Length: 588
Image 1 (cartoon, rainbow, N blue to C red):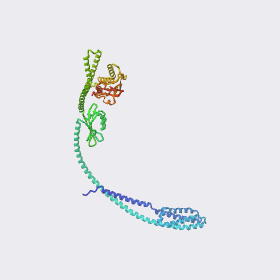
Image 2 (cartoon, rainbow, N blue to C red):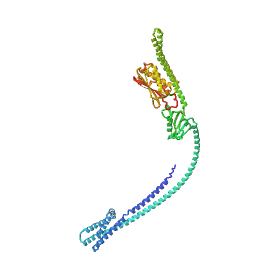
Image 3 (spheres, rainbow, N blue to C red):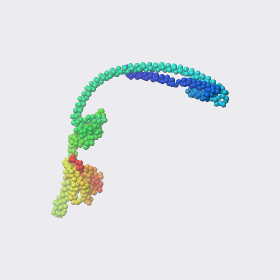
Image 4 (cartoon, rainbow, N blue to C red):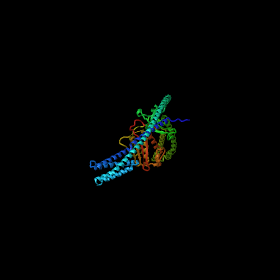
């Protein structure tokens, strides 16, 4: 199979030949011009002629001096002659004369010149000195004549050689010009041929373009029809969609996205990038959940998380990369699913709590109820046997012991019922604006009256502290904290209650100087039925603090504890303040 020669080879060769001929012609012309500039023999002919003229003038000056016509100075004419011969003795002129075989004539003339210079300085009679000078001057002039004749011959020979060289160069330049003309004609023919081919190619290209435009138009109509179907499907989809390019810039969204996400209504403030959109969503999210079974992107690069948006419910965000480097954001409303899942989870938790409560309650009843029942049974039996023989004072003491045992069992039952109501989500908080200072002072007064002593000291700011809470639940929490502080501290030590406020919360700190709690037991202190080993000698069932914390958290508050064994314990009740609040707290 024959290979087609590239179209640029022949024009390239023609241009190369054109440039070669032109460069060669210019080079030959440059050599001719340089040779004409470096013509040394004409310069030598002038120097030799000037030396001959200077020798003749010096001879005339000597002759006039001998005749007594002293208006011409021989010394000046000698200096001129000397300068001319020194010029001939210079480097380029001497080399030229040496190459022409005239160096001996130059040396002879220089020797006679030195002899004349010596005669001019000797103190002799004028006639003798003049004769001696003329005796040296004649051979010097003869030598200069020989030099002039030799230089003339060399010039004729050099001129002839240059003419031959110029003639050859001229022939070469003419040949180069002819070659340039031929190359120019070839280039012109190639250009005409290329223009014809270009015109043919343009016609073929226009025909192909028209055909391609028809195909593109048909394909565009098909794609537009398909795009409209996809857009219609996306616009009517129950989920929100947003498409982003490889640089994260927003390309398009569907109307459902604005319904599912809290986006700005003004177009100028709407996020235009994926990062800006995710940042805006996360700022308004109250909670965020990721798939616990997936720690990163899935096999297809997709990422997914669930967000709870204020006033919008739960949304599921899925980001899936595209083959072109972009990404697709899908937003689905999963509020109903989350509500159902939450209800199911709460039901399961309640079921577990109830089951655990019943197990713990059975164990507690078998242990805690046994003691007061035994006290009641033994006391009643003793009263039955010895009722008539028992003194009234001892009988009254027995009655008080029986009442205390009954009261303990009542407290056990009430605490167990409260715990059961909490497990069954039957306790709800109804918060309102309450004066926390009044609540604490009233609770302290009731505890002092119940104990028959005034060990509780209250420290509060002069201005009232208003909390957003449920009055009855707070009274129950305070009763538990104050009774524990009195029960687990010596009767001689006071219990300090301090009230205060932070930026958005109020606190009530109850501090006793009792037995304290070991540091390793503090994390488990609020667990149900847990009792510290330092409190084993004091009656109790381990439900009070657990119930108190649950009641505090129902009101968006909490209870914290710090303690040092043997020094005392500080319980702090935290409640939300009413500052800036315009609606009730969600009890759940």
